[in-house]
Length: 590
Image (cartoon, rainbow, N blue to C red; front, side):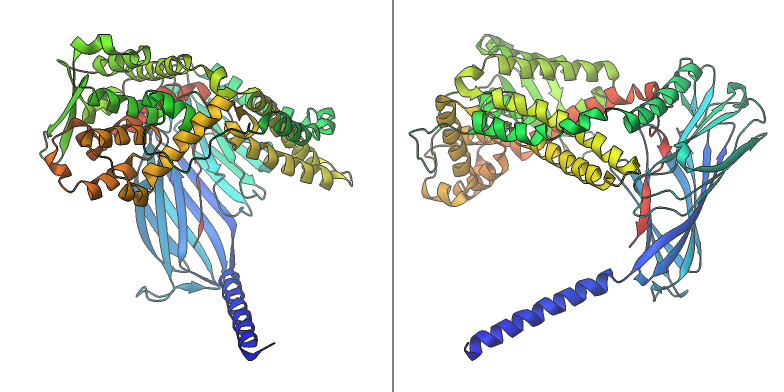
C-alpha cells in the first residue's frame, strides 16, 4: 500500500471518529419529568383557568423547554404566564397549525447569559381557555386531556385538582383506568393522582356538571341538544372498544403470514407491466388531445388512477380561461394593500362545455354576484356549513364525472391494486392484534408475537401507501399513454430541455402552463417561460395573471376550508369519546 492511500485511509478514519465523537457528545444528555401538577378551575361563565407545573431533571446542557397546546375549532387561549424555580425563564410565543407554541428559554443567571446544566427546574405555566367548557341543554361538560400524547417523555406521576362552579351533582371519569392511582370528589373539588404515564399515552378527564351552575355562557361553547346520555354512551363505547381490541381475534394472528405471501403473489400475477414498443426519452408536444383533467386523473394521481385531484380542478379552470369561457382580472382590494382576483363568466359558450366542465362552471357561478366571483372572498362564503357541504358535493360530482368519461379498461388493469387494498387492510388489522397480544401476554413467546405484529403493521402501511400501478398494471395502450405523458412532464420540468427546444409561440406556452398544472409542474413551466420570454409582462393575458396571483392557492384553501367547516359542525357528536378532549398536546426540552 503506498503512502498516499495510507494517508487517505487514516484521514477518513479520523473524520469518522470525530463525527462519532460529536454525535456521542451531542447525545450525552438526558432529562426526565419526575412529576407534574395540573389544576383546572371551571368558572361559572364557562372560562377554564389552567395552572400547570412540570418538575424537570436535566442531565447535561439544555437551552430550555417547550409546551405545545392544541386548540380545537372555536377555542382560544389568553393570559399566558410562565415562571420557574431553579432557573430564569424567557418566554416566546407563536401560533401555528392549530397550536399555541410556548418556547421557554432557561438561564442559570439573571442576566440571561448562561444556559442550564445538570440541574432540577420546576416550570410553572398558567393560562385561560375559552370555548372548552361545553353547555348542552341538560348538562355542562368538560373533556380535557390532563396529559397529551405528544410529550417527548413520560411523566413519573401526575397530581390533579379540579375546581368546579357548584358543590353538588358533579360526576367525573378518568381514562384510561390503568393510570388511576387514587381519585375522589368532595363538593366542588376533584383530586386525582396517577401512576407513571408513558410517552405517547393520553390521560383524560371527563366532568359532567349541573347546567344551573353556570350563570352565563360568555366563554363556553353552546350546543342546542341534550348531552348527558350521548356523552355517557360515547364514553362507554370508547372504553368497550379499547377493551375489545385488547382481547379479540386471537385466532386471526395465525393467519397473518398470508398478508406478505398474498402481496408477493399479487405482484407476480398482476403487477408486472407489459412490454411495449416505445423508447422515447421526452416529448415536446402534447402526446394526446385529452383535456387536462383527464391527464391529471390518469398520470398525476397515481394513488387513485382515474380520479382527478385539485390540481386537475385548477387545470380545468385554466383551460376554460384560455378558451375565454371564463375571464379573469384583478383589482385593488378594499384595504388597498392587496389585489383581488375576479372571475366573470361567458354564458353564451356554455354549449361548448363537457359534462365535467359544466359542473365546474356551475360551481363557480353559484358563488358569483352579478356574474362576478371574487376568489379572495370565497373562503368567507365557505365558512357557512351549507355552502361548504354543497361545495364538497360539487367537487365529488366533478371527480365522478371526469372518471366516468375515462374508459379505464382501455388504460389500466386494477385487479392487482384492488387485491392489494384488501391485503393491506387485513394485514394492518392482523398486525395490530399481534402487537397487542405480544405486549399483554405473559407467555415466553410473546416477544415473537410483538415483533411479528410490528413488522406486519409496517409492511401493511408501506404497501398501502404505494402507487396504484405497483400492484395494478397498465394495458399496452395505457402503458404507452402513461410513458409519453410522463416524458412530457419530464420535458416541462427540465429547463435545459426547454432551452434546447423552446416553443414557437405564446399559444404553446399556454398549453404548457395548463397541462403543467394538471401534471403538478406549473411553477417550473412559468419559471422557464420567464427566462425564454423576457417580455412576458407585456402579455396582458388572463391565464398568466391567474398563475401569477396563485390561483391554485385559492382553490386549495377553499377545499380545506370547506372540510374544516363541515367537520367542525359535528364536533359535539363525539363529546365523551376517549381521546377527543381539549388540552393535552405535549412538550419537551431542547
